[in-house]
Length: 384
Image 1 (cartoon, rainbow, N blue to C red):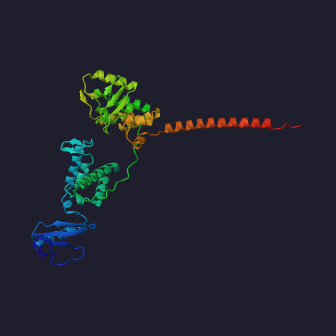
Image 2: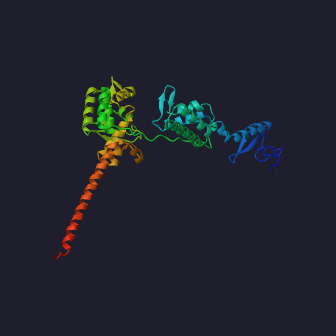
Image 3: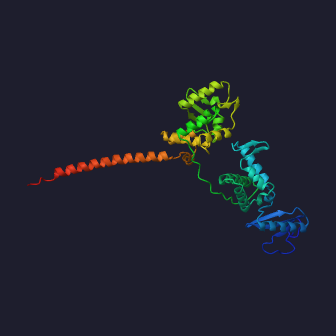
């Protein structure tokens, strides 16, 4: 049996330390340190057979723990760049559509802003205070609360992946900002006609598709002729081509079907439905903004056509479940945000209420008149 002083076993330190000062001991030739962070015991090897090295390590770790910038030895070496790259790898592995390809490689919208603030930082140094400082800086730069929240959400996802991978044990609190109410832009039929007249000819079919179907812009620009069924008058979106990766069938109205037929005649050999000068249309922001300005519809977004399409489906009496299947909304909460109520809807509701009450009051008046006649018949005749 080995004695307590055997060099291959733990030995007690030469002097007893006070509470909160940590502990140093030796296993074999190597000195170890022990300390507490958030009431959790941490033991770490000094990787040295010299006691002064272990003492310096313990003092450094106690100082870092007091400053709140270290939780675990392995965590102290994890950098922001490592957890950011892990997030990008997760997006790539799951083929998530938010991952984009730039000149310097893949990136996510909202991450470059995080890079400018936290590049080179250790992950444990990104505290709640540091996140609040990032928020204040972005607000000073004029960024919207929703834009800032998207960046913070990505940072939170980075930390959660790091915890799952065992690189970090704790994550900070991520304070989120109150966002503006959801946008409620939509187009009445007359406004849409004005806008379409102002758009370049090659964009009119795209706008018409968005107005009548409520399809997303990416779905429209990526639409291929193989997905258009003229016989059944419908568009069939393949799984993976939609935002939620689920297939979808969209019926085509007469006007839209006629317009697509004309597009097919223009480019019989084309792969994509909407093309300009022999190339697939990628972006048309300037042309769109100019047309909106000429039509006195400043600030209108193409996505407002999607809101209009959903609203028109509901006003046409299409059952909600069917309308959600056409628009591709998976939750009723999001669908309701697109089901916008206009001033004209309120006036229509008022007229319907007035008609209903008039009918009800008329029926009640008739009932009262009948009762009066009945009462008169039952009364005894008055003798003169």
